[in-house]
Length: 179
Image 1 (cartoon, one colour):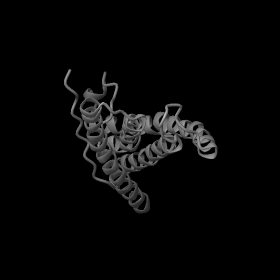
Image 2: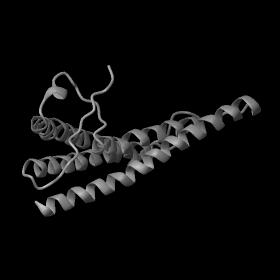
Image 3: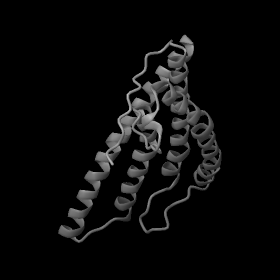
Image 4: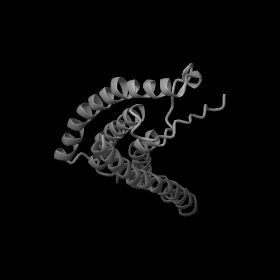
């Protein structure tokens, strides 16, 4: 179990780094958006590249930050009964959800998104907008984000198995969202 828990710590640290990139992407998108608005109204100038970089950064924030949200246990749940379960049952629900829902879906999404990225990279596809940006960097975020979610899902599964085996102490507190 110790090597698996070490792997989980490594995955958590990796996703912490990508989570930090996601935080900076949000700030950069906000600053570019504000600057773009000022330039557009003050100088009567607009750029499709500036508009597109905003959604590139937003895509980065979402795709690179999703695994961090899972790691911090802040993801969305269907909380009909979960909040009423005892702790051990919650850990089992989490583990089964990770193994039978999250991981298979993320593997399928990675499998489906990779060829789209490769095609855009090989063709050097550009935006249809005048002055637009090349598309493959933002398309890379899709399989990268799904790959990071797969890794984080594995990390979370390892930690839950470790907790069930009394080999890992995990914060199992779940705060039900305000209704």
